[in-house]
Image 1 (spheres, rainbow, N blue to C red):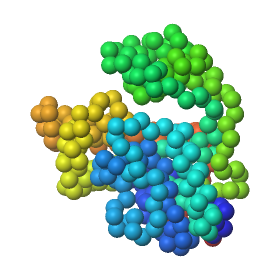
Image 2 (image 1 turned 90 degrees about the horizontal axis):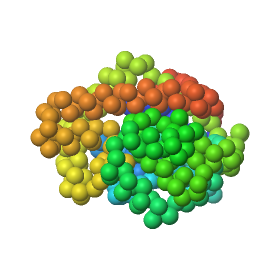
Image 3 (image 1 turned 60 degrees about the vertical axis):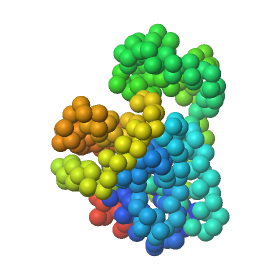
Image 4 (image 1 turned 45 degrees about the vertical axis):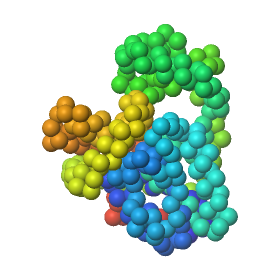
Length: 301
């Protein structure tokens, strides 16, 4: 493989991305670079299906578990860190294998991000304090009043994006939709990469998701969530909303039986997988859609 050509592997959760990345890394002496917004959190190893110690010993892995759950990790920060890791892999003569399911990260890599100014800690705290006093519907209504274009792009249920949009308009006087009209600078250009999206039969994928969730429970994810709860973090923080975490917290608080919490966590994960497939199909046609078992053969060496 030409080490100047990065390999991008995307796909829904539980579609076999990690196995493919390890196979490529072994064949091409590659570095595996995480592009999953939840696998960056060190507190969430089991429930986010982060690579195991054995898997990580078989090839260099970057941007996994390097952020604390008390932090809010942004696409902009990921892009800066990923650019460094890709450059270092190339300088070392290794293939950069970028793997994950967070569409915004891959979009940033290929299209760049608009230059939204940094939001001050004071403004961020101001908006977080506001969020503590209002439900999603009220926050979304406030965003409609301040920045209707961006509000039209965000679901009422997506609290994190609503708060981010409010931060930007409060700090800059301009909405996110307006900022995004300014072109970004891509890290990878056409010809710099190969990109595949692993397309899996939906029923089979649902079964894999359910089986994996049960396996996570057997491997100790309840202890992982319990330790997270013990940190007394704001439940609105991204790490506290990883798929399955809110429902397992309800179980730990005695609000529902474990069977129901697990069923809800599985449902959320299946719905997320469906959204991932739709998003990549509509937003990143650059990704070649392949079946997991055919992906290795479709990549050029």
